[in-house]
Length: 212
Ligand code: FE
View 1 (cartoon, helix red, strand yellow):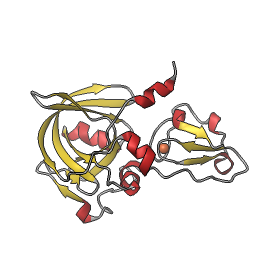
View 2 (cartoon, helix red, strand yellow):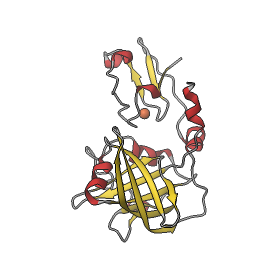
View 3 (cartoon, protein in one colour):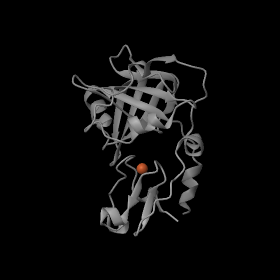
């Protein structure tokens, strides 16, 4: 099969947030879809490596903030390119950029045009990811900006790749722009384990291309 067919699926982009007694966290997903209108159900799929996935497993609830076309690359860096296991993403976020919803979980105001609060009804184990089917409990519009599509992100938000000079081969993540320099790392990209993931966005080796 020609795998580039997969690039023609359309997606939105969302900050997925959840919390436990100790900490709130958020990550970026492109997998929120309304499944039924009556009752109003939305599904999300989250990588189990994301700290937020564990928070949803524990608490059974989450918020979705809808990223709009005004969002800057820094929003993706803040929530997408590091793990909540190593960082408190709300401790160093501008206080004006978010608020706490009635369910006790923060939602993002800056760069987002709406948010919703959801309660998990069904959890399905998909191996690397978990599929949550959830009931929409609450929601609010935040601006009239157009929602950002994944295609818009790739065309307008993601920085254009900078050429890296190296003695070895240089591999670039097509999703986030992370650079793997074989000379610096000391391990050939092809020799990395099959389940190796991008340190920033957690996508797999298949999403890297050789810098020309
Ligand atoms: Fe990446």
